[in-house]
Amino acid sequence: MKRFSSQYLITNSGPMLKRAVVTTSDDGTILNIQDTKGALTEAHSIEFHNGIIIPGFVNCHCHLELSHMKGAISPGTGLGTFIEQIINKRHSTVDRIIDTAYSADNDMYKRGISLCADICNTTESFNIKNKSRIQYINLIEVFGMDPDKASHCLDEVIRISINAKEMNLPFSLVPHSLYSMSLSLLRLLRKQSLQNKVTSLHFMETSGESAFLGNKTGPLMTSYMRTGLIPTRLETAGNHADAILTEITPSGNLILVHNTFADRKTIKTVLKRKNLYWCLCPNSNYYIEKTMPPVNLLIEEGCEIVIGTDSLASNSRLDILSELITLQSNFQTVSLEDLVRWATLNGAKALGEEDKFGKIEPGKKPGLLLLDNVDLQNMKLLPDSFVTRLA
Image (cartoon, rainbow, N blue to C red; front, side, top):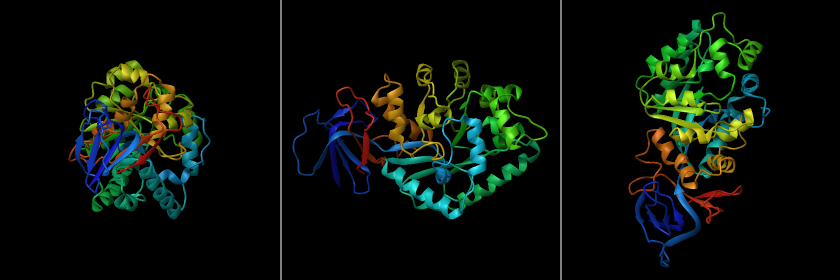
């Protein structure tokens, strides 16, 4: 049994507590929370810290198997060129892919991530996840623009899912994006994913998406033509909002990822879809497009926000706190408690794992983090804030 206390405690079950005491079992399960009302008395068995104790982080969007691509892609070139570079530079030896993914998994754990939704295009990360201290939800990703190859594309990911099932790894079959899938493939996948607990979709991450979907023009079309990805017969969803409401599985939770260029009209329309979450990956957005997502607009529209890191192809590290610091520096009015909630409780809800993660409550095992070097007077993150794992 262990006992922890700090200047403040964010449980996500009520108001922030001052100098409360959290008691855990040796395996990290929360046993008790003692609200001292700030009047903590000295006790040899209590480990006290000058910071804020929070639940472990939830990473709602990651590509672990792209970890070998760190530093391989030029920043600030836009999504179209980014995709071209991914296609040209993605291939590597299996040993290097596995080694870099293993290192990234360990680093994520050290940086406080307890639960992670990870995009999979292969089985190469599965053994790592089987042994990881992080719990993974595997989102096996489908893409393919040629409608005549839709059945083949779906068969490929079904084969990957069979491997995940044999290894007892939780998984869903999910679409990559509206700009990378034929309408035929979207509709085949919809039938296949009607029992999904969690679905994700890269959504409105570049200004050129609408032009591509609407009239097959713009920078995405240009990049696709350069790489030879345009099939003889090109069919896609016509617009983002209609596709969300009619072409994506209505079951379970849906996580829209990036949302960098989401507009108010689209947001209002797609909010008709229940159990909807909006994942922000600001460091990746800046790496690729040199811009930030419309955080204030999402807040105004009452969107449920969660946080992701994306991949090391578009980020320097898989670090949820780094994403929160970027958001804090660009959106000063967002409270620290809201940032923590997005990165913990909201993420756990989005992944359907709130029975274990996201809150510091008796019976849960969310992981305990000490958030340190914070402006405790104004309750703001600082550029050099950091976390230490306590449990």
